[in-house]
Amino acid sequence: MSTANLDFEHFRVFLEKACGILLGDNKQYLVSSRLNKLMEQNGILSLGELVQRIQSQPRSGLREQVVDAMTTNETLWFRDTYPFEVMKSRVIPEMLKASPGQRLRVWSAACSSGQEPYSLSMTFDEFERSNPGQLKGGAQIVATDLSPSMLANCKSSEYDSLAIGRGLSPERLQRYFDAKPGSRWAVKAPLRARVEFRPFNLLDSYAVLGKFDIVFCRNVLIYFSADIKKDILTRLHAVLKPGGYLFLGASEALNGLPDLYRMVQCSPGIIYQAK
Image (cartoon, rainbow, N blue to C red):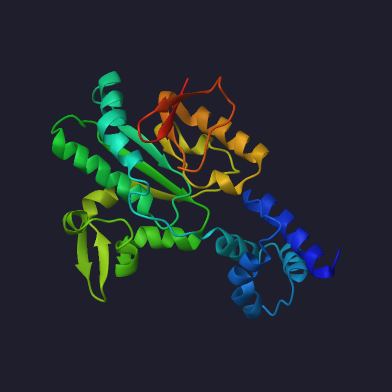
């Protein structure tokens, strides 16, 4: 094995231990494109040297910067549409019927730059507008991500016109955002008030987050090995209340674990209910 390939193997092992992401054999270009600038700034010439530097200087902040660079992903408003429609038409009414007056808790895991939790907040607002007085207990959305830079973007609640154009209708833009200088838009305060952003690694203990009625863990499990994926799904079940719902990405499936989840066909889409 060449030195470059050996260095890549060492980096793959480091990344999976750090955050669970399993890199494919052909991802050298992705790694280079995301880390070149960081390596240049730190005078590091190879992935092998990068891993050695992280291990020898654990408090330098380099580890966190590398994980941040490798886990930063773009996302959309109301991605795939159906999860948010199913929330309004089925899941929220079902939860409120089972426990009138309760506060609904939703976890948006790996929330990236914030479009998903803010889309969920808009979904709750639209439900309230159509069903006045039913959401008496309100809703709390806990949004987590591994990336400090992504969480900073989320908390700023401001987006440029390019980000706004990815899945947000003109009607929702007008209703839920305030125009800012420089062709930027800010999420209105009532929507922000429902969302709490926290730094969180999906490999860590979930006990600190409490129990949830609904969990969105979408388009993130595809990056993990089969064993880590199964472990995460098992631990997600533990934080879901009985009868709570799990939403996965459109390209993700829950294979196995029939003792924990029941598949629910929504036409379109599939969601999973905790047994």
